[in-house]
Amino acid sequence: MKVLLVEDTEAVREALAKVLRAQGWRVATAGTGVAAVERVADTADPPDLVLLDLGLPDLDGIEVCRRIRGLSSVPIIAVTARGHDSARVMGLRSGADDYVVKPFSIDELLARIEAVMRRSAGHALASAVTVGPMQIDLAAREVRIDGAEVVLRRKEFDLLAALARREGRVVTREELLDDVWGLAPDDAGADAGRRTLEVHVAALRSRLGAPGLVVTVRGVGYRLAAQSA
Image 1 (cartoon, rainbow, N blue to C red):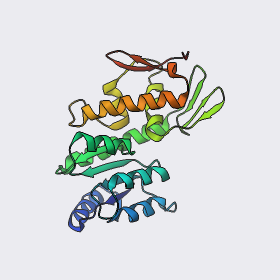
Image 2: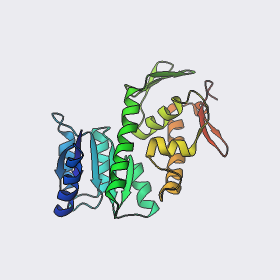
Image 3: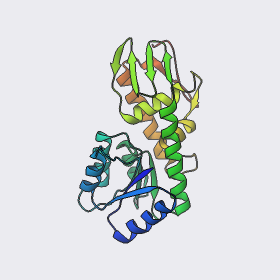
């Protein structure tokens, strides 16, 4: 696995790279946002994961995250000193898959990397699912309703896929936050994550053009329905 480590402080960058290489991973590094985007755009040897410091000298890390997400669906873990909820929400909305706040332990960072990669692998191995008029190809990340393609953003598709894999049963908000954003109920960013989940559900319904396909189960979570309202 190749990790792209984006960190502007050389000492921190070298220390983290050493830890990651000790885990058997290949590590590419970048000290600026522009360099990070260029490395992701290199289709000859793209990264499998991006560790992205949001406090970069040339571009705001949120903007870097957006640019990377426009190029690739590579998993992104935002690494930052910004611990307040608004920063977490901005990071998740810009396309990050998880969020680690400095200072963090190496064990926590490695655990979050493993969790993000497990979710990414699970998404890739899934099969196609049909729900009423909607066909979801989970491997190809394609959605069609009555044969017409529906274009979704990355997290919108991940949310839809998480619902589809449960075969129509109610999926709790906690399950969705863990599956799509890697947030446990006791994580510091869980409250912000719940608000982000609501925003993504509303956006997903809008893009599907059939609000009744995603049903809210009050006080519990959401499920997919075969019949759209």
